[in-house]
Image (cartoon, rainbow, N blue to C red; front, side, top):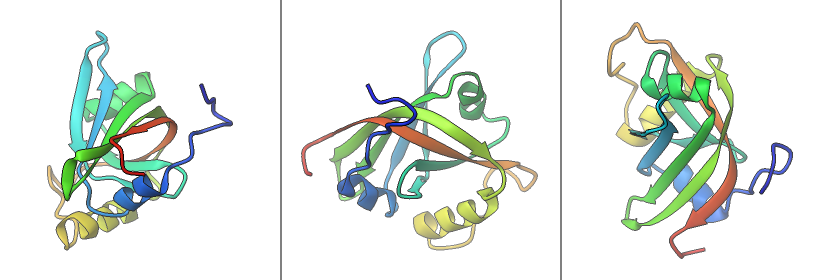
Length: 139
């Protein structure tokens, strides 16, 4: 199993999906061990999977306690084609979060971010190191 110094390379097909408005599901672990699943917008820096979320949301509270995560990125043209990822959140940052949410909004909605959920949110950017990649066949 890869460790922090040996992340799984992101396949080109996955990188292509991460650069498009592809459906993404993120699974974290609740304090009692049960799964918590959310849909989110997703991006990449070419090395990590990037997710923008909000301070106080359950997903972030779970990841601050246990950084392990599972992610599914689906092909919007054929959702039966997807990548399943397992990894760990390696950074949680507020620094680039405002620019990232604007970029994600442009990608997913074609317009500026509308502050869904309220304008007083503190947004954070999660960088996920991918340790394992599985996919429905297409690469």
